[in-house]
Image (cartoon, rainbow, N blue to C red; front, top):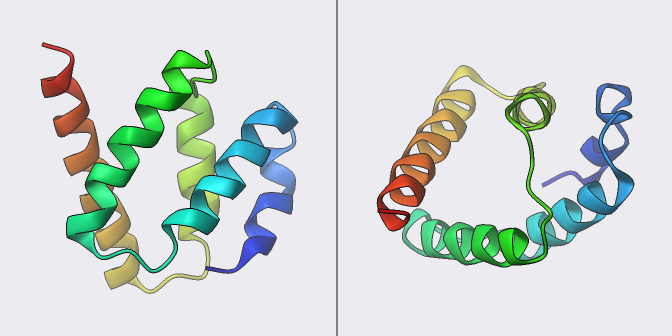
Length: 95
């Protein structure tokens, strides 16, 4: 993944600590397959929650928009699919 996305101007309103954490997460998760990615994301979300570093819905949408830039329609669909599965798994783990 190209690391320049973190410098996108549309992310300038997000706390730099959150962006740093997100950048580290992206670096560690780079190259994981879908089977490895979902448990990795759940563990990262749990860790972020414990550190009180949660992303608002608006922040999440901004980040996803930046990540989808210059991606093929298929790659954009795959991102949406992973996010949807992650959200479903996260909501199940809270019940």
